[in-house]
Length: 316
Image (cartoon, rainbow, N blue to C red):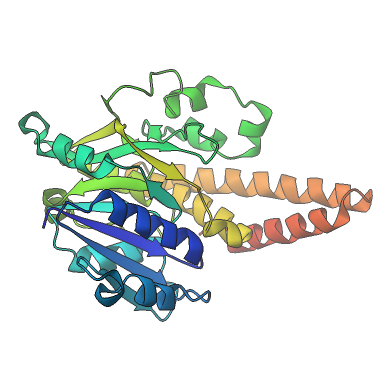
């Protein structure tokens, strides 16, 4: 088996259908398997997969293998479930809100199979949005100062600061194949030997930062991580997580805290946690003031509730 595609999905049936079809269209002459892990979707996802992508429905192989979880076990655990049964030499972890371009799979396989790339453990295609603009998907490992800015009020206040520019490699050429520290996990190919050496994704990261942690461990074990723009994937982005905005904030920022505790120190993790909570407290007060002034009260009330949930969680 050349390559196993692994998709973890939650309540994005129509996007998932397009993602699966795009994979099958791109790999008609390749030896692949496709595993979809459904995290207890309520939108008929499993029924759609079994009706439209079973071996009977397709009239050919490969059929789509489905793991139907009775509860939402998280993005990380879902991927590990797929990894446990996958047979491919390479594992292509790809989100359900993506559409792979024709020729991308073969280009990625040829890149990984090249003898000079034997120590490339992870390779990621170029991501782009539906409007054709590129998605920033290459990263350096974050510093503590980076974490204070990334996706917080500080980044809103100072959107073009050098910390974020450097972190996201926005000052480098995104049209060139290049070694990077880590890549956004919406689409990445992993050599099986990497999994065999360092294990799967760390399930303490329910979602977010799991690919950061995984790439960090792979690099520490001597593997290269490469951004490969000759293969391209359309990414609609965050169509599952946007359904629960408060939980998204909680998972995103608590995962940042967990990463710093794991790879830096407990002290840095705790300092980051208290800083992030102070930012959310400020936003809660800001939205409360706007609500009292009568400005878009329905929107303000929703944000007040979301920020209250984040504060209640303690980002733990």
